[in-house]
Length: 163
Image 1 (cartoon, rainbow, N blue to C red):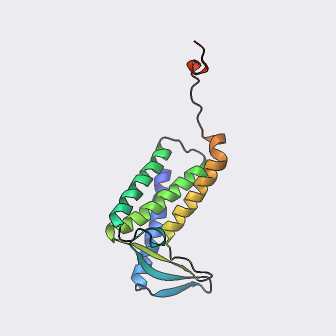
Image 2 (image 1 turned 180 degrees about the vertical axis):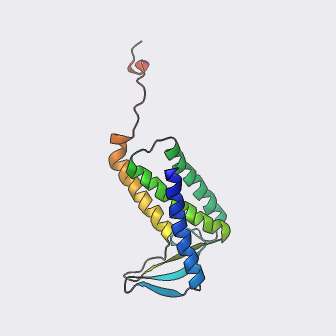
Image 3 (image 1 turned 60 degrees about the vertical axis):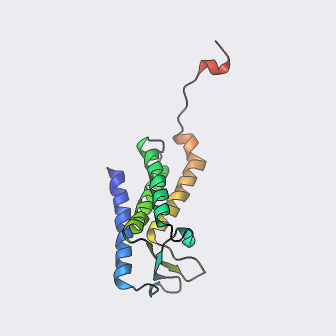
């Protein structure tokens, strides 16, 4: 139940920001956010990261559903139990759902964060959730999974060659 509330809060934050951007900015229009660092620029992305797979909305939606089902399975089966791994999974689910909602109901994803310090593709809050979730998941898997969540397989005496 707590996990569902956290994912719902992440989706609400993402969709709320997208709603504000769509309500206040025209496509291509910018508004200051952090002067000299970042501005909000409304962009419609029909692809994935860096506009890869542009126009393949249905394929991206299916891939997103499959990946989110896998992450959800990891949580439901309690394969991931450590708080860092769980946080990573919840962020991936919230971000994935936020962008999936856009793809299904708009046919594109609303992006808005436009970095001014260096050239970088415009992105959104759901993208941030997915990236941070993936980084947390990688840290968890590389450094914590073996110590905290890996389950030992039952010992099979026949595997040793003893009968």
